[in-house]
Length: 238
Image 1 (cartoon, rainbow, N blue to C red):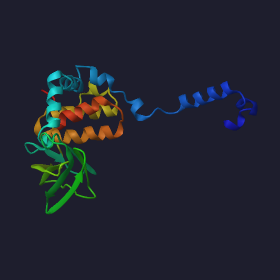
Image 2: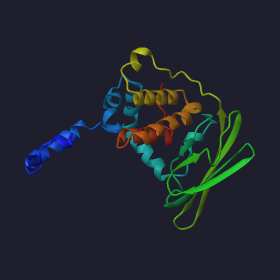
Image 3: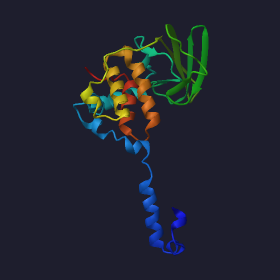
Image 4: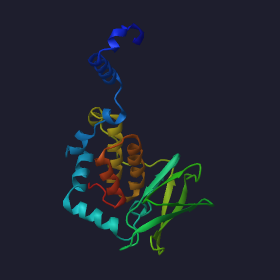
């Protein structure tokens, strides 16, 4: 294509500009541009829209801000949730730290099935890769999260148990009419929301799906709201 363009063409600035614009418009759109979530977030008739509306309400905003500055809470692991086996990476986030003090780091320790793994992170989020620690079905695991403040003070340790199963089954399946109007990412987002709607047992698995979407789609602030909602225990209402 480029060889067929006369040399004189490149000497005209306007012609060069038009050619560059033509190439830009012909390029495939990036993933984030192809998958706009605006409809599903701001349509209160969808499961995702209902949950998002709850999370942006003034009481919810105040609640999330309070827990972000409060004591360490790992809401995702409360009440022995389920996690589906076979994941390459398991994601975990939490809220708070040492009340009234700035946290410098968090320590995470995972035990179960005769194995132990630990790490340190500066953020309230951790990725546990299967290459480092494998979660096998039909086993219970304990995760301990603790924090250390900027001043060197050791914070509280929060231990929680959860169960790994072969399949996490819940009533989250999409009906045909709804699924036909959604992109694949919107289907995944609806699946995560409907899982979280089932209650504490399913919130950890819902979080895995949500973080998977966040890894694929950049710059969607609404997704961050849902992430924060799960990390602070604000599950969608039935």
